[in-house]
Image (cartoon, rainbow, N blue to C red; front, side, top):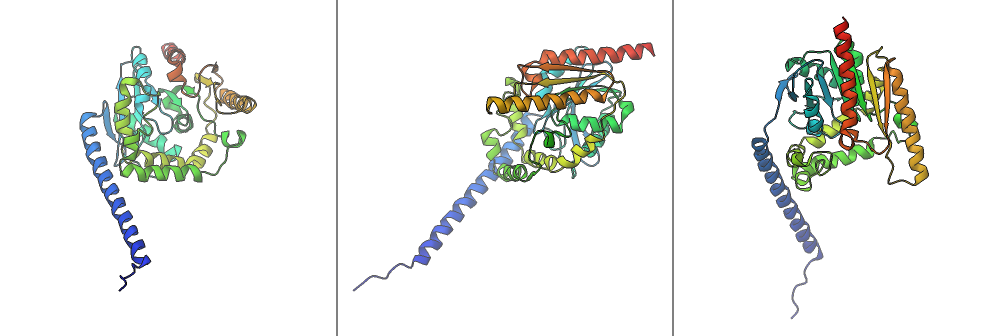
Length: 336
């Protein structure tokens, strides 16, 4: 007389099963897409430079031009060597200009952890030696690379002839700028990024590469290389060691009388209230001026209409600083 009632439990189970099946299909499809796309990109965009074994894993370095001292470009966080290419080509007209990918970025393999500045300094030394690039070098550093290169200069004083710090980080900026020392939110975000990269999400959305920091002709190539599964992992590994790296940079504050140029952008804090933005800029300038004390032969250039990527906003200013350092190094070599 009456039909059987459907059990609510069965309906829920069927719904859960359907969701699981959909998720499995998404993961399988995304993973396949990521794998195939990565293989195609590897064939389409071979490394422009050399892959050097630095201890069981390869790092990429691309050098243009000839002459001494060689200029070594080091990128900011989550950025690959192509970001420097337009300026690198300008510098190559008067000396050797090399840009490299830190482990896990661009064409470089993931490296061991913890990824502290001291580890990265050792990798850079091995990379330059393996590529046959003889020092002493002029180091050009952007953002967090200033922390890493300062440690390199402390550990290898005979290999560093000069430095150009392009809006670089300061080892005390977290405390002085009122920033949280808790890395958990950043690391959680990067862990999600790592998971999503496995199913091709980062490649589809252009994570890290859909920004004007890459020349328009290089953005497809940058998107392909930064869309790799290990990019977010490299970012995560480097960020995990921030506290230790900043402590190591705190010991790297005396470089004698080498030519040191500090370039500072002050067009910051557009998303803040005017008073907050001004306070941020004042602290940033204070920190940047302190870095002038790292050498008795230092120069400061404030670029008021540039934000963080001065070499993108005003490459001519960075070029002039590099030319000045190279010229001074050559002059001192000639006198010897």
